[in-house]
Length: 174
Image 1 (tube, rainbow, N blue to C red):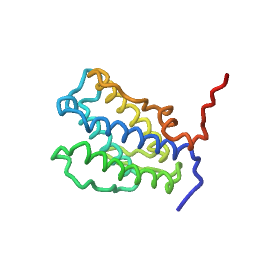
Image 2 (image 1 turned 90 degrees about the vertical axis):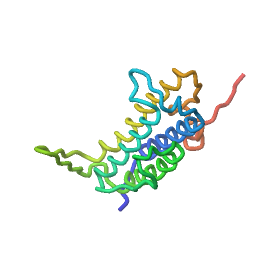
Image 3 (image 1 turned 180 degrees about the vertical axis):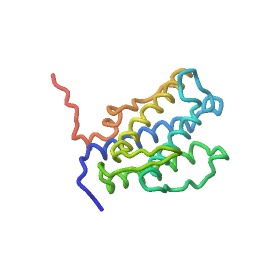
């Protein structure tokens, strides 16, 4: 069932996917030494951070639906970044579908040993984007520390990649 959705939320999910893909695409070509490196203050290695990002998106889907698309690899076998990059696209499509089908005010119910937690689905929708930004920052911090130059991965970089989505254009005057 579809419901009215402000297009900015869809664009936030599209941005999150774009930034994940851009950063994974850069990291695919790096040495294993860099991919497994970490620095104090970051989440962990680049590989571990991407794994954490994807597993979090799985958990977001599982919280709402009780299920999620299974990867075509086993996490225990340390999938390569190209496998994770392909799976990120599958998760993005499932999350975007969820955003479009699940009302933001729908209740999400969680239970644990001696606790329950009820909240609106919008909290998960916000978490998808915030969590992605936070951990991409960890990864870019490691990459910058290793001397690797990066393109703009913020919303302005996204706008430059897709100016038609924002009806943006630069006009030089004078």
